Image (cartoon, rainbow over the protein chains, first blue to last red):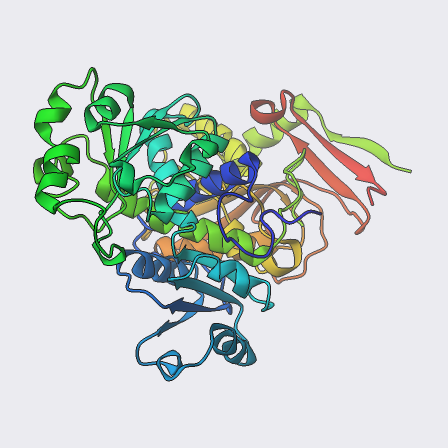
Length: 319
Length: 179
């Protein structure tokens, strides 16, 4: 039998459309688990998972932790500060030491692109990328896809505009791979300084003005302006960015149809998105967060077993 | 070489379900506090058929739920996860008489998982097990209370249950030497 996903989840680029659909379909029943009084199923009982976070994260780390706990796995959180990493230990040494304590999975967030793949090739445990540099953030894209599918009933044929700081965004890259593989049209919108030079090679349309994106799209995925990754010179000022590229209710009012509003968080209110849009009736920013737990449960569950089960053919035969 | 033998045809299944429905009502002395829970997938269809049979006779509307036990299995490591986990939707179970409905009872591991899952949703006053086919071969101390038909089988055999809702026809077949 071929593995459902392989050993690691490094990004959406290496996955097939069928594998992405399998992840989304598997996430569906996990939504309901979080609505139960006892929000726990024993599927990953006895598995040990390490959350190795070299970069700050609230949403993603907590979301992974909830997903792990709701599947009954044992979890340990390691943050770069306060661990041996701050004493100069290398990534591989840290991971090998953890592995010597018999762990099963590592969820890693790292500032360097490729860190998850690098680690996955060197340790036997399953590795899940929770964001690596400017490369990919696959579980974020999966939860975006799930949220879009919840609202529109499909991904194929949708027009999704990814707006803002595409250059520094791993969320944008994972979204572009996932959306195009599932047959959506993707547009990117932002100041030319914040769009990667070869972005067209990924099969996306460039929308130069935010007004163009609003006219064109069914949904806007508004990226955070990653102030911490910018030395200087990308944009004149935050105020000017908001004036030219900010998603405001005045701009949305001129759209030919109601646009679904997504944002991966954390938001810079008043910069890339105005508060009345973020809190408005078409915003799915909080449903995205809810879906994040379900999607991460699906990823953990599918990687833990490693193999897809036999198809449910005729008969209620129990195995 | 495999040999298929028909255990129950459409009419035999219908008759068995009618008898099972009346046995459930008899054992529970009515339908008060009665809840049916079908195990995904074919147990769900059988549970709803039994519900309709009981509702017709008793002029009631007994709650009926569905349970997917995939996440409660004890063999995730050996068979790997089944790709699609079905829906679980249960009515209130606290202080009810819960009748778990499944198509085939074999090792008892599915029922063990179903009992565990039910316990996470509430505390039934009593739980009964109702199966269309009991094929023996238990690996756990579990037995059915209400049985459509019993057949003795070996490990190499397989019991296939087809229901019209999913498979377009109603039939139970024993496949000898299915390995």
